[in-house]
Image 1 (cartoon, rainbow, N blue to C red):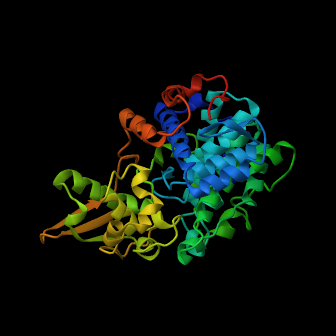
Image 2 (image 1 turned 180 degrees about the vertical axis):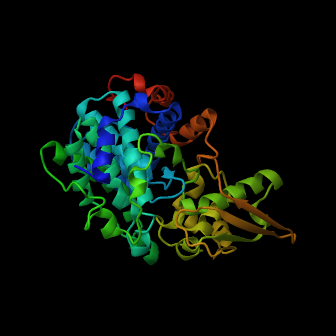
Image 3 (image 1 turned 180 degrees about the horizontal axis):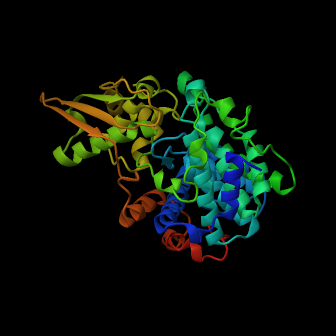
Length: 444
């Protein structure tokens, strides 16, 4: 075997956690903790409830996060846990953006495979890092060019990360791992029509759950001897050539095993689309610094990329699953409560007169940038007393440039697991030392 697909497969099967710098291991552990907590909170959504009902038709050795009594087949556990982790639009990304959701997809797939095979916490963490490195490099190589063609990028890239993580747990050699990549490539799927139509945005959650599920499925098939093409990424009719208008093959392997993509992992702060994060952080800062309240807002203009103006500027979203795709709606919610708490963004706010009135005062305009990977915004606030304030924001708590402190991570865990049906403090303590766990049947 030769080429980038083969090189990624060799890395995925030869990597040892002993080769990773401490910050890489810590970042992966933080993402595991964060993904678990978000999935617990995601159970309460309509789409989460449907996914749980669907997945619960299966039985097996794998756990459903937040529901200790439920045990599922590995594929279905990956599907449900992946969807639950994305249910609030709160799961992790890469910064700069690359069309990947590492936590929801890779953690869900790795955990399902680990519980299926009785693997250790160390093996789980190794699989997560392998999945992150594979997924994020593939995402970066697409140059975020799939979505302008109408594809939803995480549904395309996700199965590769899931297959890498599951294949690592299954003990693949490089050839079998590359076959799993080839199978995963044919399971890539997801369309952006929901964002343009303003209807049916539940499929956005589906794309993430299915990516985790398809990653496990690809690895399961490969484990049985099913074969896939060995140049699935770089081939003439492979993943990049087929789905992407532009690509950079070098990003697949440059610095592989030395320059860790895991360090670019971004924990989202708010339960809404990433395009709203920097402007919401501006509002958070104004609330802290000047005591900004809803009654003080005359108008807010968010200057962002052309994508934000085109896809994220709706002032009156009608679909509850699409509401957090709207920057005006998300900013309006943030003005009325704790922006770090999903309760502030409850779909019921679509009927809140105050939130709707605030959303009408918020405009999203293009500043000429065409990037899909740049989340920086310049927010201009006009107050009712006539003052005008501006704030340009590129980072927020959770980005690589502004990582969470240990206390912030614990606080976030507590917020997300308020309704956890067990001793959440004990779970948090064990997750902090996940490498010491001999098996993972307790993790649910």
